[in-house]
Image 1 (cartoon, rainbow, N blue to C red):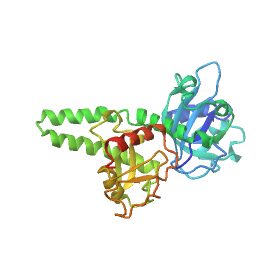
Image 2 (cartoon, rainbow, N blue to C red):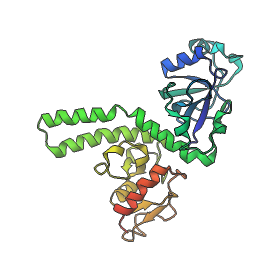
Image 3 (cartoon, rainbow, N blue to C red):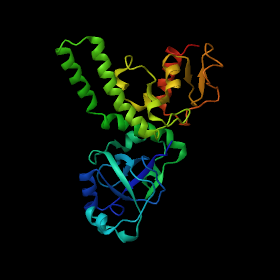
Image 4 (cartoon, rainbow, N blue to C red):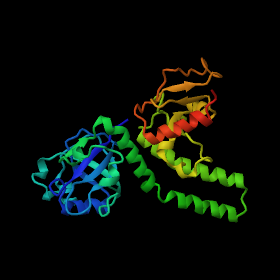
Length: 294
């Protein structure tokens, strides 16, 4: 899994003139020395000053690596205000959400995820320390759920209301709502995991399934939460959904005695996401307790 990058916003790194364009477009360029990958997540941190500070934005890189910009790109995003912009290297970014005052996550709440904040305030851009990557991914996914999908639940409720008014059978309504929601979540999982099964690495998209850990019907609050879903090839998904396999907190597969030695599932199989978020671990604990057939 891609490491989360911390982008540090100061007036020197991104002056107000070009930041205002970035905020309007919700996409653009950021001066960056880190070797980034397409779809790699980032958290945008605003340094301490007289106003609020903390995480003010988050998003993804939309292109591999960094590159020098041509005159058109520099002029369009007002990057000419950055010293020697023509010789600087920039990363291409897409903001999912931005909120400066108040920040998305202020310093007090940020400490719930990171017990050491001083490296956040260092100038420039850097990969968040590996020790804190699970917390960084947990925070990114929480923000993703809260903001990117903030309009999906109302949409689902509207569809549900319309179908109910039309006297559509309850079971059909449930299937429609579930299909719409799962397709949204599947699209996000494909982005997060580079279109590959989290266990086998299978990359054929028609064989990949968005597999809820805690079932859709059991926890409506987390039905669109990426932490409560795995991207699995259909064979793993079927066995996981039926409770014949589950995963421990380190991501290793646990196989039910009923199917051990069958279907090509091995105890050495492991989720490619080596560091699971705390939220995912809690959902997997539910799966092991209530769904897994020991």
